[in-house]
Length: 85
Image 1 (tube, rainbow, N blue to C red):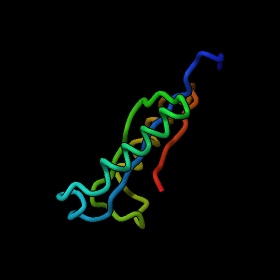
Image 2: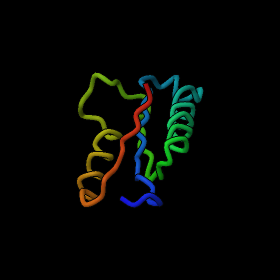
Image 3: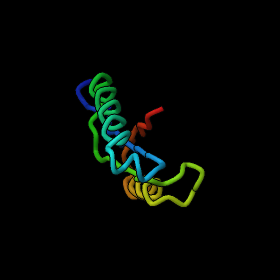
Image 4: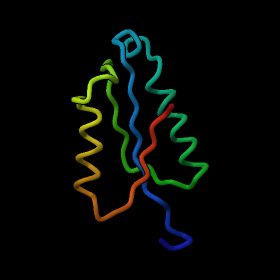
């Protein structure tokens, strides 16, 4: 990577309850925090993935499968994965 090249990144956000999805708590603020961090670090966001109202205890989540498939499909490029905590 050259000094002028930006690092690619993807964002994964999740909320566990339907109430959080309906009332808008969580996903937007998580994505905003990740985007702010990415801007600070100079990352270029390629895509955002989300799980809405799905327990983090489940491994079989559509929103986690999608970024894994994306990364596998684009394995010739390096990506930083941003997950809010």
